[in-house]
Amino acid sequence: MIQHTVVLKLKYPKGSPEEKEFLIAAAKLALIPGVHNFQSLRQISKKNDFEYGLSMEFDNMGDYNAYNVHPDHTRFVTTYWAKYVEKFLELDYEPII
Figure 1 (cartoon, helix red, strand yellow):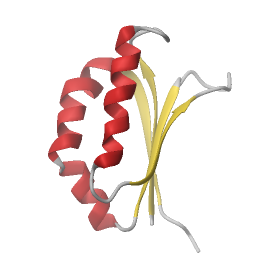
Figure 2 (cartoon, helix red, strand yellow):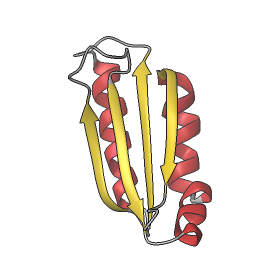
Figure 3 (cartoon, one colour):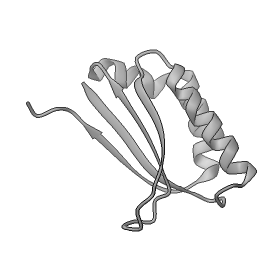
Figure 4 (cartoon, helix red, strand yellow):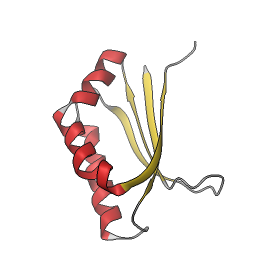
């Protein structure tokens, strides 16, 4: 199992039309084959300045690699991610045990 999580800060303020558009587009990533347990998350802590998180799981590295090159994912990256995201941190984990 691969746990893929990205935390991010948008260039646009909370409640803006751009925020809504980005989050709607991001939710469609859940439809890509191999994606499981997709979540769109809003940061509630003041311990960092990231505002949102996207989290999903893949059964194996092959599914994760297929997701990364899937046309819907690459379109999301070029259409929304590159234009809307100010900064981010990507975390990819696999279970130790």
